[in-house]
Length: 331
Image 1 (cartoon, rainbow, N blue to C red):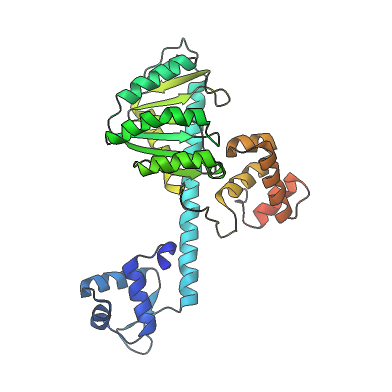
Image 2 (image 1 turned 90 degrees about the vertical axis):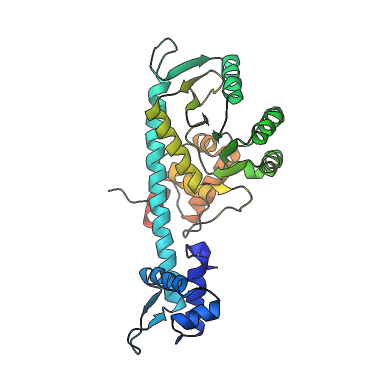
């Protein structure tokens, strides 16, 4: 139970044993749990650092477990701080990636830049992707925004993905949370997972992107028309930044088989992203695009959030969201 709050299994077992037998020493705990004394001591060190055990006021040199209701508050506050820090890292990485992508989006096809190859048109993009996929040896990292995937595209990808996974290539893909509502996409993802592919979902993604063996990345020039053109990036600094972005998003994304997790505010990741976009003045159309949902769904999510905030306008929703701690206050 406490492992979901960031506590290790051994530490949880020791903490529970101390609650049930407050006068147990290290030797008694080790015997009762069937674990080495050194392992119990290490667990006690961790529990002490977390303030889940403290020196006994009655027995000098002994430790006693902190009351469960206080321990839960400590663990939840710690996890909340970690989530906030992780979210800050995600937003920072996304901002850097957006700046990087914008710089390349402004380049004209005729421009000559080291580490940048321009592809014009869908045929050129597909041909280049075919070559990169053929030469793939270790890992493919993909952002797949846009919500539910076209069935024709998934059918076409099956033989290729089967071949890659059979060759031992590690495949990690992040879709939008909205794909959870599309039966065909979920079936495809489950099939991919059965072969060893790894899939997670996030409430929003910065761009469509594929990274091949951490050495080549392909991103569209325009997020609104991904078939118009793309750039192939091979610069070491660029790839380092894009790989870091992927790892950051991957860390916070949820495995598809796991239900959406609501935070301490009662918000799902999709709702949390929606309220941020709402507060920034984005239209329902823009929110729908970022979340990979229909215009109607975006409007419904926005209306539900405004109703929960008891706000009559989007500006008021932003103010009330800050007041409730749903959004960071302006510095």
